[in-house]
Length: 95
Image (cartoon, rainbow, N blue to C red; front, top):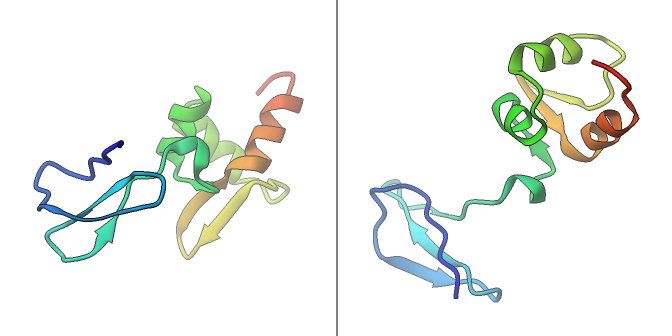
């Protein structure tokens, strides 16, 4: 059985998923689990930088362009669509 650590101030486990992942209750009382980056559909700039090895400033520059197909704006928050970003990186010769 694998255990997912959400934060250091976790309370006792509140449940287990079918795959054996243990859910913990945070201080706010919500159930949560940490999803690995490669399973997320959208990434923050920090996650995308760690995932790809491309710097945050370069990602900001690329996603500021109107023709960027892998950026998702949620208000002022910029998210990276991971699958489209993977395709972009695979096809790019230089950035």
